[in-house]
Amino acid sequence: MKIILAQGNPGPHYAETRHNIGWLLLDTLANNTAFQPRSKFFADIAEVTIANEKVLLVKPTTFYNETGRTARTLMDFYKLNPATDLLVIHDDLSLPFGTIRIREKGSDAGNNGIKSLNAHIGPDYWRIRVGIWDEKRELQPDADFVLSRLPDTAMDRIKQKITPVVTEMITKFLTGSIAATSHRTDTTS
Image (cartoon, rainbow, N blue to C red; front, side, top):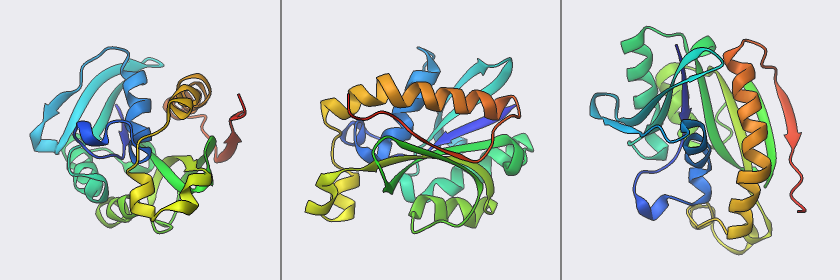
């Protein structure tokens, strides 16, 4: 079994914000499988099969900056190894919108959600970083920017361009063929 955990914030107010881009991607992966509240894991979870692998799609309900609690609880309960069994999807404010990077491990780079994960499970786990930066970033404080709603054009690019790339990367993770890489989706159309 593998776990794909996406960082984000619960509640309709945050549903289509930049900080919840990972949750938007999980919704597509769930393919109409409902997320069920699982309070003992501090998360909403959908159980799916991808590439012949049982996968838990996890949306922590702890809010973005405390996602490590969810990860630790899941790792302990299912006796999984974060280095081989966990993939985290999160937004990255320093990457241009449409840039996707995969890392096997690393520091938090100022991301409070990653800081929480590293504190609870260590820095050794796979991550897909999805760039959310655009020109509006310079017009407002970081917190306001990441919690602002994605424009319709960005939502379209997520569905048409980013989701297929992330889905392919997830399949590679599940089949053991993932590698650290960077990918830039075409964001001009």
